[in-house]
Amino acid sequence: METAPAPMKYTSIKKAKNRRRAIHFGLIVLSLLLALIFAFPLYWLLRGAMVSHSEILARPPVFFPKELGFENFRLGLERIQFWRQLWNSVSIVVPYVIGTVITTSFAAYAFAKLRFPMRGAWFVLVISSMMLPSAVTLLPQFSLYTSLGLAGKPALIIPAFFCAGGNAYFVFLLRQFFMTIPAELSEAAKIDGAGYFRIYYRIMLPLIRPAMIVVALFSFINCWNEFFYTMIYLKTEADYTLPMGLYMVNGMRIPNYEQVMALALIVTLPCLVFFLIGNKYFVEGITLTGIKG
Image 1 (cartoon, rainbow, N blue to C red):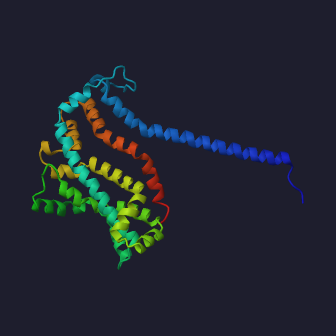
Image 2: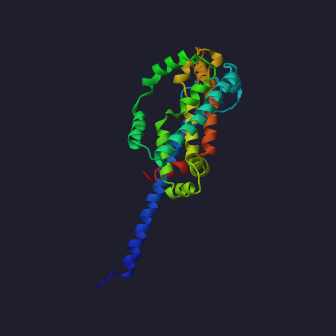
Image 3: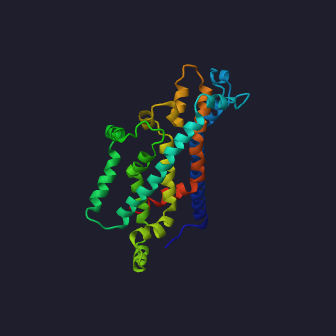
C-alpha cells in the first residue's frame, strides 16, 4: 500500500496551521472591532461629561476635545438633591438584592433537589411567567400598595424585599447550577442528620457562590436603573432615585447636555464598578449554569 511522500504531508500540515492562524487572527480582529463599537458610547459619555457647552454643541462633533474639566459634575449635582436621591436608591436596591438572592435561591433549591407533587408543573408555571409583561401586573400591584399605604413612600423597602423573588429567570439560572451539584453530597449530609435547611446553608450555598454573585449583579443593575416603577410610585423630588433625578435634569428647557452626561456617568459608575469586581464570577457562573439541564 503506497503512502504519501513526506514533503506532501509536511505541506498539508503547514497549510492547516496557516489556516488556523488566519482564522485565529481574523477572530481577534473581529473581537477588537466589536469591543471598540461597544465601548464607543461609554467613551462618548465620558467625553461629553468633561467638555464645554460650546464643544458639545459643535457641528461636526469634536471627537478629541481640546480642554477637559470637571465643572459639569458640580453643576449637574447642584440641579438635583444628590445625597437624598442616592440614599433613596440605596434604600431600595439593597433590600431588593438581598430579597432576590434569598427567595430565588430557596425556590431554585426546591425545584432542583427536593421531591414534591407536581414539581415539574410548578416549575413550568414559574418559567412561563417570564412571558408575562410587567405592565399586566402593574395595576394589581399599585392597588395593593395603595391599600397598604406604601405607595409614594420615599423608601419602598418592604415591597422591594417581598417582590424581589418574582424573577423567574434567576430561579431558572440557580436551578441549573444546583443541578450540577452531585446528589451524593446531600445524601451524605442526610445520613449525618442534616436537614434540608442545613444542607442548603452549609453545603449548597458555598458551592453556588458564582451563580449567587451573578444573580446579585443582575438584580443590582436592574433595580439601580429602574425608572418606570419609580416614576409611578414616587411622587415628590425628595423621594426620587438617581435615575429620576437624571430625568429631571434632562427634561429642563435649558440645553445642558454636558451636565446630563456628567450625571449619567455618575449614575452608571456603580454598575460599572460592581461588574468589574464580579466579572470573574460572572463568567464562571454563566458558564457553569449551562452545563446540565
